[in-house]
Length: 399
Ligand SMILES: Cc1ncc(COP(=O)(O)O)c(C=O)c1O
Image (cartoon, rainbow, N blue to C red; front, side, top):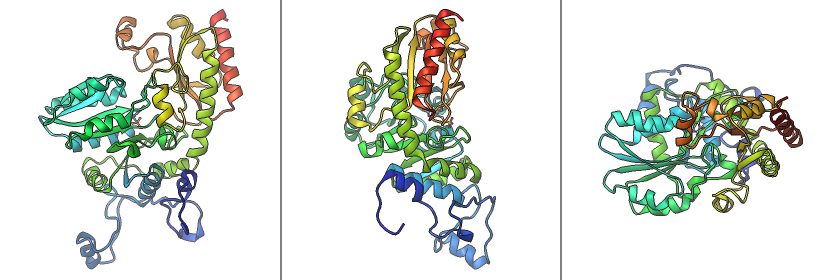
């Protein structure tokens, strides 16, 4: 870039891109190669002895992936970024890299269930202990820290499905007293447009790029952002574990990032309008959206977030079947897991992630049969509001 720019929209379009592209192309080149050739053995020596910066083999790095990493680092205000083949590959590789036998980690209770499963079951098998604390229990979190053993605190913000928001600055203050403890935030639901946890005291940030960052429900990827030395070490470790993204998916991520700010602005605005409409609808029992004053973390979200995000969760007045009827009658949001794409997606968690549990078992972990999670896409706001209201008409009348 010819001059300094700070706007996230500008950075998302231009940061990380090569200044001159082959054939004068305006778009990012896709480097589809498994390996890279050297002119001669002297170049090999220069590479291995650190005199030149170049690629070596596809598992260690790819130029298109590197462009995505640099672009995302610029947008999130991070020293550097390393990208993996999925959000879970980013999380599991990082946690594996950070802990060893006999150490202890802290998770907040609403964490993505696969993250929780990895920590409690997989890391547990390697002798890593874990404690789970509610995201609003700041005293509980402080007293769960074992100064000689705790390696990290991991939370999401906002969380899924109740969109609890962590006061990241407050937790960062607590963990500052323990230099060995790192604060890791999965900010997938927030996106760098709505919140930048690194500037609020987090040590590392995760994003499932599958969601808002790529934004079109067409690729899987995961990113870790943080200070350069830590990210460089993770990049080395990625070369061992092998979860690098492919060049085509990196291109889709780059293309998605270019419109991130626009999409998130629309999703924030539509989600707020939908949350307000549902909140005043007598057929809805309760709405969970951090932008509503009734949300328990509204004040935290207002202080720390630029927008409240594109996911709205709510309870339909009625039982499992009434709620299923409502979900089935929606025409615009399609039924499916995931979130953050241009297409609105709706799901009834009792029949998706928690299908194998009984109603009582689900209640025990806070998942009600009449809970719905809506990921708001970029369709016209009025069409979405009308569609949800029409589906409620049909579900409640049993039509
Ligand atoms: C908050 C959060 N983090 C991480 C993941 C995992 O991401 P991926 O599906 O890209 O592996 C998900 C997936 O739903 C998620 O919701």
